Image (cartoon, rainbow, N blue to C red):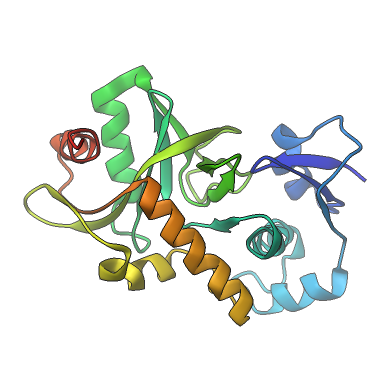
Length: 236
């Protein structure tokens, strides 16, 4: 069974469908050692598929099903969580932008690429993992990158997280997790056990002690990228 390196973890997977195998290929390792295994589960996949947008396409649902199981295991045992966001690296540091779908996350990160050019690398445009690893909070690329399919297999220490909202004027203000807790919960898979909810809240607390958390109100102009960057890099 192949082993894949995702979020600084060796994960043993047995994908059945070509769609999933091809998507996972950039994360394949030669290692026989693994941190955990997600076994093939046709019954579980069938139930997941039945409740999905494509109820007759298990081949399209296998990847999301595996990813959901991976994220749940990482939250339970490996100090990490799924975070619905568009994530980029610039000058070796990670910046994440979360909002409901259609708000403009991808438009905003595109402005970063336009403004800052080759200094910016897209990590994952939709479905990165955040993980505490060797004392640092990292944003990690994953094989699942949303409709745009933009991203790569890399990690970066997190500099800032932004809750993005549309507005006529560009502004960014530092906020506490409590002020945007609803948005943070909307961006992740909510745990169904008290223990894992405690894990998630502890990870939020640690992440936003180390990294900046900002409410970013922005329009589609390229200047919004400069406003966001300055907010995270003008503080002592």
